[in-house]
Amino acid sequence: MSYRRIRPGYEDSPVMRMKALTDEQCELIISSAAKILAGTGIEVQDEEIKNLLTEAGCTAEGTRVRVPESVLKDCLDHVPSEIKLYDREGNDALLIRGYNTYYGPGLCNTLMVDTASGASP
Image (cartoon, rainbow, N blue to C red; front, top):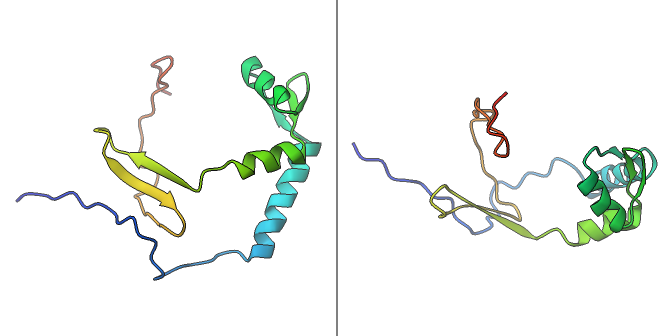
C-alpha cells in the first residue's frame, strides 16, 4: 500500500469558523497583558536580550524588564499577517493566516534536544 502526503489547502474557508472570544474580550486580554508588562514586567536573565529590549525603549532594573505600552503596540503593529512553516525538506507545510485551522496529535514530541548544546532533558 502506498501513502500519499496530504497537504492542507491555502485558501481561507468560510466554513466552520469558530470564535471563542468576542472582540471586547480579546481587547481586555491585550490591555491586561499590557498593564502587566508595563507594571510587573518580565524576568530577563540574558544580557544580550535585555540590551535589545532596553534599546527598544524598555526599562531594566537588574533582571526585571518593564515593557511600556508604546513598545508593545509597536511590536504588535509589526507582526506578520501570515507565517509559512516548512517540512524538513524545505517544502511548504502550513500557512498560518486568517482562519486557517490545523489539528495535530498534541504533545507528541517526547524527545527534545537543545540545538545549541546538544543536551536533551
